[in-house]
Image (cartoon, rainbow, N blue to C red; front, top):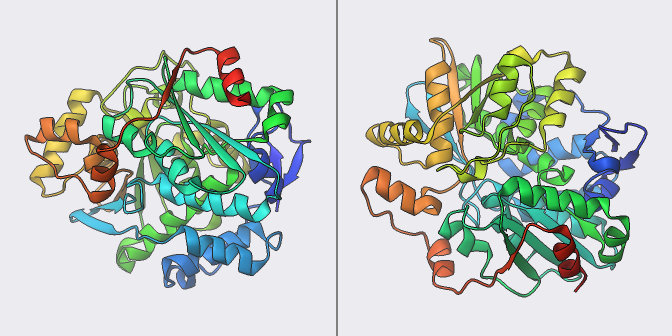
Length: 424
């Protein structure tokens, strides 16, 4: 598998290098040089999740990893389901929160841990990643206790839900967590600065587990196939998928699935008030505003890292950006959407509610819609309880960590301080 740096196409790496390195020169994102066209879609959709995923990722990665190694990595990573639940006659919810940290990031985080283990020597690696909520937990749990791997997770102090924080800031051992006095974009900028520091990168074996790492992105392709596989065959034509979007890795994976041949008519990029992309698609002007805090905090991203990959896919497939639908909801509108869903008998949380409402408002008569539910409602218990006037019970995974003490450090938004911290 050959990948190139979107910013500097002359920089080319194989899969193992891309997984170990994370980012390319000038913070460029790696992207596969070739994405195969799968001509056996119906056959793939008839397979179970793990076997199908082995076939799909095997076709993309090729023979760089021994087949048995790749298949074992996928089997060890995808140990939980992604059920499709009917909400209305033509709208379905893809539930991606049945993994160990109750969020869609478990798919990418667990596969990346397995892939990194497969391509690494005994050299020590430091995973540095920023999270707006769910990435931190997925990465922390996926890498917890692995030898020669230290994980440092940056998150915006006071801007993720208390239960999200508890889920990954209570582990200790090889997991260090840092509450940065700033927003997610500040955390992400610190990660990028660290990767630009060659001496630091080489000294601590720096790697990233954000969706900028190609292994995480490839894993996410698989659940789009799982979604379509669960639809009745007569509903697979004219399929629209609404994706709650923050850093845009999730949408990128869906677009790759479409590029491979999965029958998805179009996508909706659904955002909160941090609506850089919907405004860009309307005006053609890339004008990020300062990030604002919202109910859907995992989407509080004004400068989405994966957007260059989205544009690269559109360019390579000769699609036009006008084909990508989009929209945003304010917090009051998000609350209304949550209530509307609850009245339909479906319990959701703010991110999924935004994706649902965008889908419901843009779906045409003959289309079938799927929206992605990226986190368990209990991860946002405070908001969900208040909006829906209920007392949502905590799943065991959350209840256990909720009772444990926080182990986080606090830090100013200052790269020099972070650099010293990483070198300790």
